[in-house]
Length: 159
Length: 159
DNA sequence: GCTCAATAGTTCGTATGTGGAAGTATTCAT
DNA sequence: ATGAATACTTCCACATACGAACTATTGAGC
Image 1: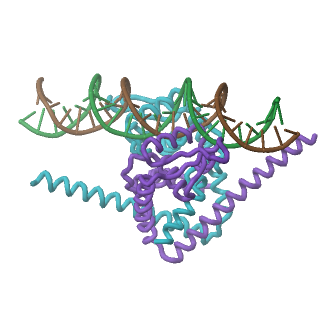
Image 2: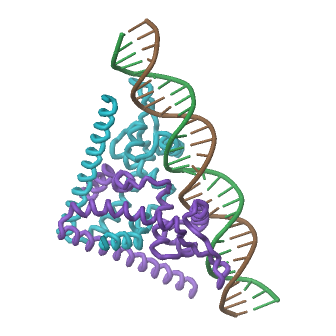
Image 3: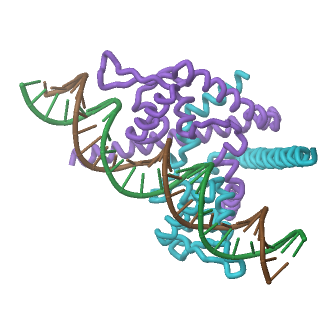
């Protein structure tokens, strides 16, 4: 238990590095973190619809509308109403947006490389292994939680 | 290089876990992330002045003023003008704030324990070792950068 | 073919956060 | 005594967060 408190203290003492990557990622952009992530996630998938962006970024649709509209206004994104389902709006990067994302990824990779250089092959492998293990466990917990919630809902409805 | 791109893709595919801890930390609070961190950092140090809070959280003083004022209004913090230097405002947790922080830390520790349980002793040790190494390297870079900047400034002034 | 629930997204209002500029008050070096 | 430096606050414009209410569209069910 004392070990965990020490871990939290360590985190807090270094929280600028942990929670504020701009401390060591010199992106020097007019984009906020949300905008940055939106651009990267759209680039990752080629094209996303509004609800997918909201889901990935874990923000409400109303916030997504504002975020996307501002990026469209800045010329980085293009919105397009689906022909087959007029409710749906698809979002893509513009050429300007794509150029920006290339620069962003380059900068990020420079810093990832810098960190990577500090690690031995064994450390790197262990780190990735741990990361994957933790992510998978968290994903599994989310699914278990969702299943539990749904089970409870069904029980209520049956009663 | 392709390895780094895969790393970024992995991050983006799991960014909710990485950047949105509320996905797996069920804090269930009316506090925002900034407020949360402010409370924790003040608890960590017992008492901080405004500029220290701004520095720790990497936000401008104007933002800190608003943040602290809202937490004072909510009854979690107390502000106090220094007797020895009337420019300085010291910030402390109230009893209400301390109670809240105890709850917060309990919740955080539960989740840290959950992740900790996934790891072997060796993995845990390696992870901490890597983390310390990375943080120290980043701190060193910041200092080197600062020294370089100061050196350049001095050179200009001498010329 | 009609109805209505469900779905996709937008608008609105409110609160908070961001961050620079301008301001007030205080301290301290000269 | 003066003025630079320091600590913080206020002001302002904009961005983000988020729930409620809304519009438009789709599709299941009859």
